[in-house]
Image (cartoon, rainbow over all chains, first blue to last red; front, side, top):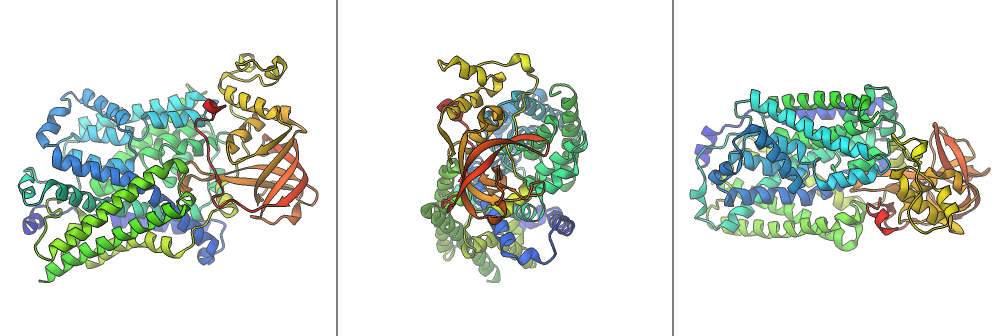
Length: 337
Length: 303
């Protein structure tokens, strides 16, 4: 079994290590540019901040990761490919809308979503449906809507703009992928035959647990590494200094998108962080922070690059960056004026 | 034979890591120190994660036990699992790196103290003084009074936009108090209400406990009494505070915890109109074991 596996399913060259090195180099550069004297890295306050942020993100992600990998394992064992294919609408628009509705019913953040989505794609869910779900799921759901509304009590239109823009961006990206992306974009191809024959040897419980644990390690390493990077960034890069960089129309939107990427917050909590910028930034750039962050962030991109080919992740990121940026600028001039 | 050994090593290492995570979570949950990392409403999820981890750990030992006798199809059908490839000979450094990634948070969690963060992190985050809430499109003409049977004069005082009515209600409650205390509960909401209706609260008595914090832009007679607010976890923590003013402000050291009592005044800070405290008395305080405050999503329903 293992031999067959290595010959047929040679994994594509992984760029994850390269990405990791780029991230570390970036952090080192930010560190040098920041106002800390070199050598303070071993100072205990900074080490303690890093440790606390790092461990906190790992602990906070743990339940959602387990929910994700268990969902994935259950799907793997109990939902057949045929059933999956029957459940996906044939019409692409319907498929994309179904994916958005799925996000409303199963409010999962991306930590739990990526493992489940990988399984669904392997079971025959079309790529454009899956990507729509990844983009829209963390934002367009009742919990996030409620928390955004609560954080921006004085300006409910920000919550509506967030939902609307997230939905629009996901819809457009989904359609682009449907129209232009044909090839399989998974990093590792699954063979088309099902594995059911393996399972009679051990019972289903063992299979579910085995898969869940295996996937926990598989996805967990990206989440923990992501948390590591976020911890470093939060420790050594002053958010206040970053914010001072861009206050102008346009640059603020880009800056807040960058901040959303770096902070890698959960979509249910980022509204409160955005709210703290309400006096310094345009509403559009706050929406940029709250739409871009959950769609693309340090932790999420690491996870996605474990599932999809690097080229595809870059292409997807480019679409999301452009659409969110343009969308929030447009919002600044119209709806949120 | 070497392959069997390496497989067994992987199973054992995973068992150790799972045990570590389960142990760390259970320790933090039972000692209550979990609250230094995540917000109270996520505790239930942390228990769920701990339960998952305990079950998974048990299962991993079972696999280890069984695999001593025969090869177990743990997940060989999962071609998409990186570690299966890294289990092959020749990529030992890569799987060591992966295991190191998992062991690092365990080591840090086990050997560094669990502590609360305050001023040093606030410096990175930028202090929120809770300036007036945006009124959005609503103009002066759209101001409304809150519902209820309170004194009409009071309601007139707290006229606001339709979206700020919850803060107006809270503001009215605070206004009727002899002396306002910034308690842990509704710390952020109270700060917001006080700032939104700053003019109404001038010369009212206020007590606040928090850490001393300074940043550029404050005068020598000023410092900020701050608290850290957490929504989910440390990653989203942000500092909130009130400017305190006193001629002998310099004597209070950064990061020390104090209780300040004084009267409310108005300050202009970085282009925002915010409240400040004119200090009347200061007492040393000790931070709570869990020194964080949390936004209350349902405060409006509980008013």
